Image 1 (cartoon, rainbow, N blue to C red):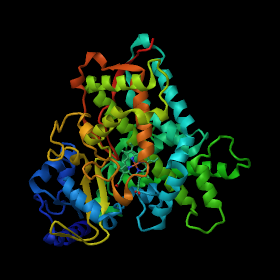
Image 2: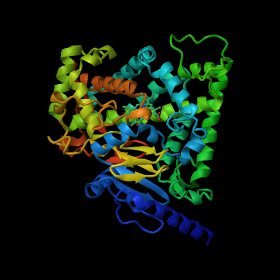
Image 3: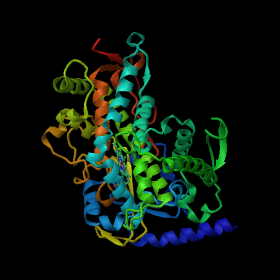
Image 4: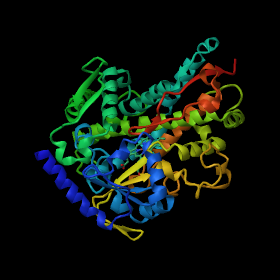
Length: 506
Ligand code: HEM
């Protein structure tokens, strides 16, 4: 009875919103447009289809009002002129439990010191070119390790699960930059717990859309649990589960922080891992704004892990998938590599990446068709007026970045095809200036890791295709490669990418 009363109140409240808003498809009582979230099609595609009919569109998911933007011109208008008013992300329940109440970067409100300090510290001490360069030996070693594995038994022509190999490679690189020699990447318990937390973070969370029932933790989730049920399917209440997982992760981070605090001698590695830097900032006596608290250190670390690993892995997977589906493009990339690196299968060095013009175009084309964020979320902190609509503060914005790259008005030639040559004559910036393509977002909240992310992605791709020819398993034709998307925290392949490598410098 009580629950019904709250639901009805929320419905009446949300109806008031719709008076001065963009057009909207038919909404159900109470649930609003929740049904689109369960549409069998990929969500950004569903939203794109709807926006062809409605243009700028208003949706209501439970009690949460949302404006959906799918066209480049409105994105331009919104992100250029209204950026300060939409520079916050909506508060997700997961950030309360997994990111220390939003003390990280993405989860912090942009007007709070947490955001400014976390972002500044991460850029200065990890992501800026001069710092990122210090970790080159780590990347070189890890990439070399993967190549050695792939070369090992060429006669066997074994099918390789590229998705899991690339995930392991990127995890190793990121964990080593953050934790240094502390072997967290070998800690299965940490990784499994973390993965489970992120899987749950991406799951539909009813309480997020109907906050008035959130306190009751009603959502029961069936999923594979790594740490309690030994990888057996079990049922959990969502919030309760997040709390359990965050306790395990916190214990882990505390153990490492304690170890770092007790280190008496400076680390022998020629670079200082990021956690060492964060802890020295936390312990420093200066009173300037870079001083961090303990929860903030942990939140920054966890957010950098979540923001970097899955995005980079998914970008590599999509690009390699497109190369396997388009053998002529792959051949052209290989020819460019042969010209720049040579024919002796030398390891690709980061310094060579700037000379790989065609690979740059391949990357842009891949990010046009497969922006791994899929949708970019923002929340208005002020009232906004756009295209004669008045949008009140607290409204959520969903910018459908997946749709931006498929707008025929902007991409008239071979819109749905993988065609890197389109970038020969048009110079479109993918770093947030041009709102026609937003793989790294834009404005104040744009990705601070785009240069490192692009560098790692290009390095791994260049290396994978420089030494190897790739075939699909069981004689599958390139056009039959399944390209189904899965929307989680990032848009990744629904199924792992499998292929057979042949080392061609035998
Ligand atoms: C190819 C790889 C990557 C892609 C495609 C990507 C994409 C994105 C996107 C779309 C956003 C949201 C931007 C917005 O809301 O406007 C974002 C945010 C973020 N990314 Fe990346 N990213 C990548 C790699 C990285 C890496 C390597 C790091 C760090 C090591 C990183 C750290 C972050 C952080 C901290 C944020 C939150 C920024 C904030 O809220 O202020 N990303 N990324």
